[in-house]
Length: 340
Image 1 (tube, rainbow, N blue to C red):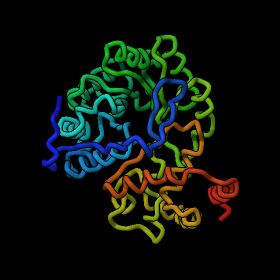
Image 2 (image 1 turned 180 degrees about the horizontal axis):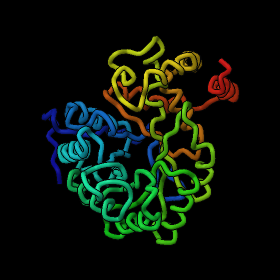
Image 3 (image 1 turned 60 degrees about the horizontal axis):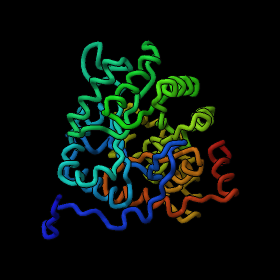
Image 4 (image 1 turned 45 degrees about the vertical axis):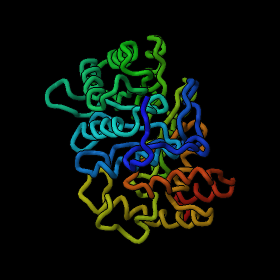
């Protein structure tokens, strides 16, 4: 039994009311409830970042009822460092609360040199999860994803690897990410036959990226699979950061391949109108964007990142105003269609 020293500020005592305000949604047809807002450690938790800042963010997230923490083998930078830092934070703050947490990691992108460090072979997936567990110093993860489809490995091999890690006790549930509707349906059927149902699909979804509406959400619902949306703020486009141009310290202002300056400039007119609509609702644009994704009951959770405690709190506050009138939804739809 852990004895807390309340006089020691380094001792973490979670908020007693941490489950009072957060909304929890059922994940597909499973027994799992996930917070409507989950925390991803893609950025801000690697070796290039300040560990104590990440620790403050993770503590506040748990205080706010965010039980679901999302990682991947290659999060950092460098690869693996987010998992290793998370393992440090688990040891320092969260081990007494392990059973209150739902921890996920993934494998599927480039991780180590050679032919066995990428994509979807059984060798890669199982070796990667073993490495992830060592980095995080965990006996198991709650959820293990295949991070992306592999065009060359038979889908049966990849799904059998997911089934195997559950049977080995290394993961309680499995999921897929970035799968198109047809492959998602095939994967779900294979896993169902193996006796390890697919719990969840992690897909990119925002006001500016709506591909999941073209069949994927219907496929997941038909198969009893939940959906968690990543990049719900479109890499920061759906915030007030770019209303007056591109700040030099922003993602678009840096040489990063996933958000180009031209993408931002094309979207600024729509961003401004959406920001006006959000203000009419008494919200930040980011808060309205998160609430908009969650308006669809097929979405179990939105996956956010955070670089500060304040940013985290601002995003979670979206849940306080998550309902839309028909007129508001039509106004947003008009902007997205181009009627500005």
